[in-house]
Image 1 (spheres, rainbow, N blue to C red):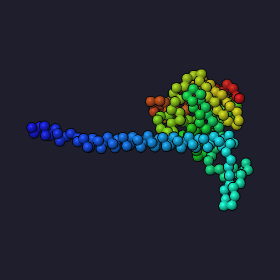
Image 2: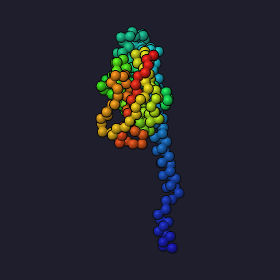
Image 3: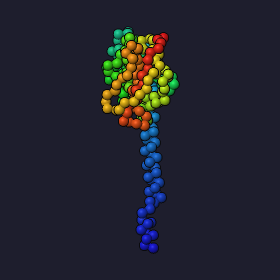
Image 4: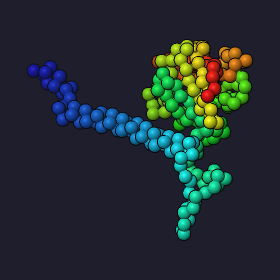
Length: 215
């Protein structure tokens, strides 16, 4: 009998188990809700940026007496939402994302895809546009599906009113040491995409895509 009493003392009461379960469910729901809200805010922000990028949003000066539409020079000074300068699209994984000026504070891998310093914009002959992005499960894991890409898949960069079409010619991995070697043909305009390897945080995967047409 004494042995049974000791065992009974170690058991969790139904009320305690229910409380633990409720806490776990609440925490799980909080994190899911937090990611949902972040995702919705991001979608709204993207929509605003896209309208500005297309020139479909009017920017107004606001004062106590009247609302007046600004001219083109004033738009840059008064707009609070910075516009994308272009877009990256990858049809196979249904990816579309705008990117900012290279010196913008918003050109940051923690909040968007990032144009790496030293990159060339698509207008530079035989240049290399290098874009990095997070993979994983977070709201900012914009490159989480890049692992599905293969040689021959295509990507498009819209910039300056033109579409630059690229085709993936090489995919390789490198150790995540803080530096990445870009293996490309210097006689061809290139798009390079970089992200952490799926299920292997010790390496990065590099996707080399070469320009094949401009529209």
